[in-house]
Length: 466
Image (cartoon, rainbow, N blue to C red):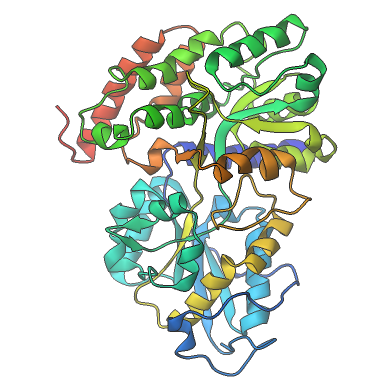
């Protein structure tokens, strides 16, 4: 039981950091050589032009040999904690190419973000570093600090939306660490099947399902707002519906021209909380993230609005129930516009001043190759579809990811969370969401309060909000 509690708490802490605003990665002084799993084979595809320019003898199966080269990498401690996928890919790459990889850990959040900027400015940066995808990338001046990989052949395999999150001024800089995840509604398929319910395509249909589940004696909706960050997922995960109806919302919002209190669909992202008050577990204001994992797995609750990385926690602690886990997007007003809000992973960036460019490019090409992704996912369950086109997840990946979520990607019905489109995110978002989720405020009041919260941050960012 203690093992289960520890695993879901670690997952929850990582998600909390993500929802805090895609915070950057900092640095703690710990440095170590990373190694783990022992599987490796020939990399797929041809070598990039930059790598081919210095290819030497072969290391294994015709691969380039970088014996004697040491690549230094850096990532935040939360990402590295218990991540067997990273160590497995690194170990396989060392065997394949002959180089040695060292991994330095750093703190996350603002402290780590500032430390990374300082190291970039001083020239004391690792060959490769892990940092945010999305709106915060521009803050570290990638043109000055990171290698432009736009013309590398592996970039053509990127999912278009992911590619946009690591692109600044039409130049591509990032390589995805891992898979995506969604802000969605996780549900227990066994309960849905028992009650003859279908996946809802509109918000009204979702509320009808909640009522039917409640009438059958089940807790219709799991709330875990004792961990305040979880209260934001409905609001943030509704971004697909906001942007689908208002394609320029993010741009106008950052410019101070669009507000949550004045755009109908944006206000509804808060108003939806009021529709759910009758459906939560009795202790929803005090229950924790770990409780939510247990409740959904054990049919103590039928639905949970959550980041899909919770699937990984459930898979670790309750693997026998994974066939009963399902995912669907937070619905909007129309069944004709139904899609998933996606959180994209942090990305690797190559130091523009590295002396080991060819080796770094070989490693990054391997990282996002079919072989590299297979090694990673064999050691760490994906929380969503891949950022790389054409990757088919194996049968060992739960249907909730492999089928349910993948269908939104295949149909082109995905959009990034708002924090990937603008750096403006009110720091009091969890508190505002908790207030409206508990019935203390209305959706309209919450939207107005969040606008004011965002205004204060926009001013700090130097934006001209009136």
